Length: 167
Image (cartoon, rainbow, N blue to C red; front, side):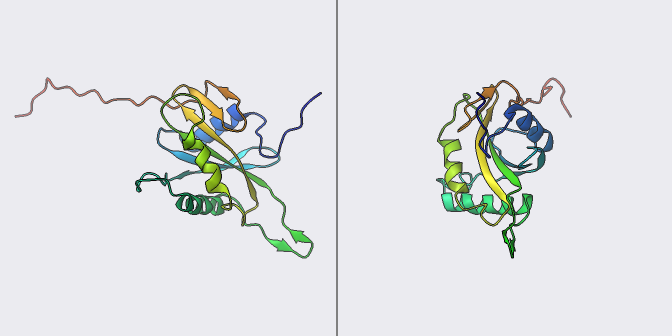
């Protein structure tokens, strides 16, 4: 018997994450939100969300929520009212936390669920899973599937030739 998929679940998370990487590079330290068409799960846009922990000494869920709300409004259509009711949900918002470390979900990923709580309510989208991508691969927090690709690209150090002197 085949299990039915929840609306927030990705049919092929590896393919979706690769598509997100094509639109918005998955680089260590970034948090990326991607908008997918709900029916086809095609990536229609992605945006980097500044990490609320960066400019502040601690995580502020209200600031994170405001940042996500701004991204959600930019990526997906507004949900409007009609005489017959509200417009339908047409998109899914997926969060990708790009960080160093092991391919396990941590507090760094879980805190984004709280930030999404009301952030997408004025849009025609539902929030989906939070994924972590590391140099070793990826996994979903609720989904719990994982894989080796995509993964963060290694940081390339510039080779400096110290043998040449300028006089």
